[in-house]
Figure 1: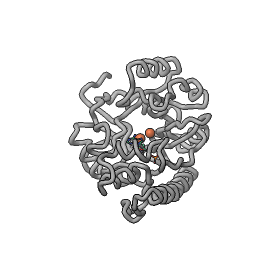
Figure 2 (figure 1 turned 60 degrees about the vertical axis):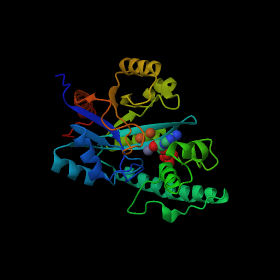
Figure 3 (figure 1 turned 60 degrees about the horizontal axis):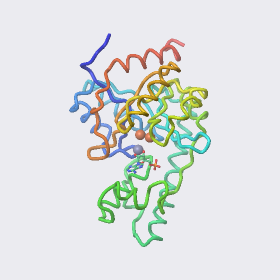
Figure 4 (figure 1 turned 30 degrees about the vertical axis):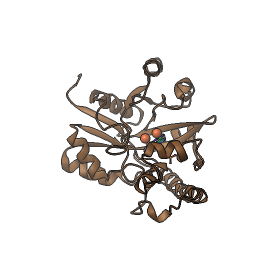
Length: 279
Ligand code: AMP
Ligand code: ZN
Ligand code: FE
Ligand code: FE
C-alpha cells in the first residue's frame, strides 16, 4: 500500500550524543512536525533509547531503536546507521569503550584550545549523565562564550577535519561495524554516502554486507542522489534516510524530507526476512 499521508525520519540525534534535545523533547518535536515514526540514531550510544521509547509510547509516536557508528574503509570515514537493534553485549561494551575514548579525545581538544590561548574547560561542557561527546559540543561552547559567532565558524576555524584543534577519533573497521549491527539483529544502513565521496565506494560496501542505504539526506547533489538510487536498485538495497537532526537551528530540520511511511514498511519486511522474530 502506498501511503503518502504518514511521514517518518530515520536519522536523529539526542542529547545522549551531540543532539541538543532530550529524548522527550525530540519526541515532542517529531509529533509537532506531524511525523508518525522516527529512529533515534545517536553516535556510539543506545542509552537514550529507553526514554525515547517510553515517551513515544505515551504520545503515540513509533520509535525505532538505532545507533550511528563511525567506521573506516581504506582510510575513508564511513558512517553506518544500525536500525531495529536488539543490542548484543558486544555492542554495548564496544559503544561504552568508544564513549570513554571520546572523553579522552575531548580532553585533548580542550588542551589544544588552551594552547591556542582560548581558555575553555572540560567543566564548561554539558555534564549530566553518560554522553557520547563530539565536536558539536565544543563548537556550541565556543559560540556560547562568544569566541566564534556560529557553529559553522567554529568548525571552519578550529574543529573541521583540517583544523588546528581536530583530533581524530578511533574508528571501527567497517566489516566489524556491520558484524556488530548484525549480531544485534539489526539492519546495517550506509549513512549519507554523498558526504565524503562515498558514492564511489557503494559497491565495495555492498560486498562487505550492508543491507540498505540512505537515499534521503539533506545535502545530496542531484548527480549523487541519482547514483545512490541507481546503486540501491542494482544491489537490492533497502532504502532509508533522514534529516540527521541535531536540534532546532542545528543544520537541517526534522521532518522536512517528507519520507513516506511505506519506506519503514519495506525496512521492517527486510528486517523480518533477515532476522525472523521467531528465531
Ligand atoms: P565527531 O563525531 O566528534 O567527529 O563530530 C562529528 C559531528 O560533527 C557530525 O556528526 C556532525 O554532527 C558535526 N559536524 C561535522 N562537520 C560539521 C560542520 N562543518 N559544521 C557543523 N557540524 C559539523
Ligand atoms: Zn552528530
Ligand atoms: Fe554521520
Ligand atoms: Fe548523524
